[in-house]
Image 1 (cartoon, rainbow, N blue to C red):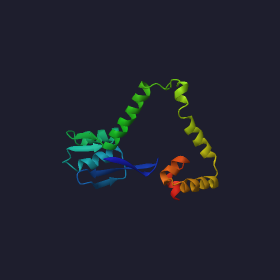
Image 2 (image 1 turned 45 degrees about the vertical axis):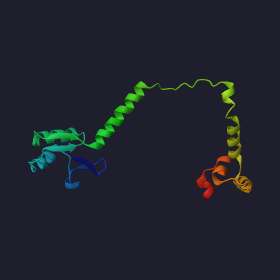
Image 3 (image 1 turned 30 degrees about the vertical axis):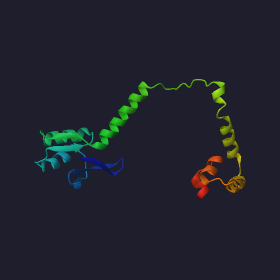
Image 4 (image 1 turned 30 degrees about the horizontal axis):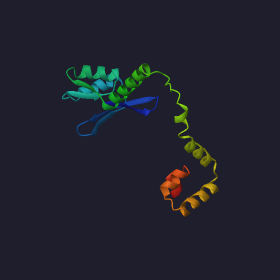
Length: 158
């Protein structure tokens, strides 16, 4: 059992689905307690009902079938679990991550690669194609060329 928008923010309905058969049983043009409760009473053999977190649905099921087991649906379980997990992590993790200073010798190791990447970004399209031709003439493969000029292999193929 879940609600759906007939017209968003204006009118809503309730959909009833047989989970085991994966088929829609009925759709009601309301999600009001009285309408849902009345519909539920027409099915006296309900023992387990999967529903969203609606208090209205909870009350309607409890009144129509007091002995029925009410189960939260998978979507809402995962949504709530994700929300609670996110809030927990926000509270427990520090808002800032401190990065320790790097020694001078380790900071110089990647400098050449960074400089080359910066230079490659400044190349015009024509210059990139000229550089590709030079690397092809030198016998470099496509992957090596793309790595050398910081180009995505998909761009090379197009």
